[in-house]
Amino acid sequence: MLNPDTPETSELLNDPLATGEYRIILDGEGQYTFETTVNREIPHEFIPAIIGALLVVWGIWRKQQEDLDSD
Image (cartoon, rainbow, N blue to C red; front, side, top):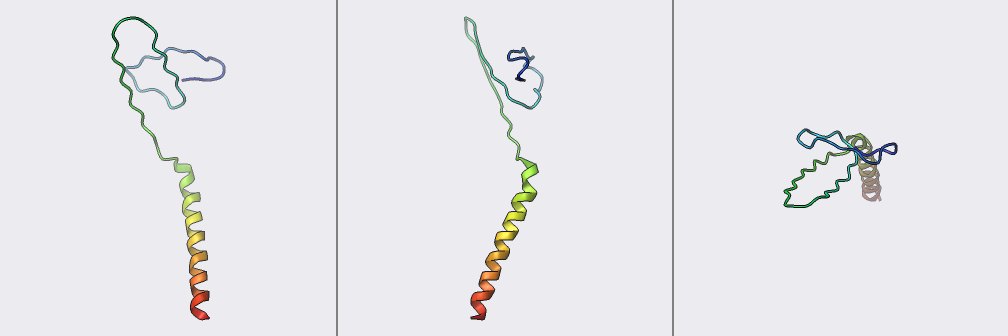
């Protein structure tokens, strides 16, 4: 994993890697097979804020609909 103190590191690629930013550089001669899997996760810390924002927008829309119906 990259961090400001050590811009270069070696990792054993047979085991799962810790989360973070990685830069992979392949340097050498010959034939290589390189396979990577990237798992992206939903940023769950933003879900309550998104749900709250949707509820606010829905509430404003409903209020506007009630005002139109009462006219």
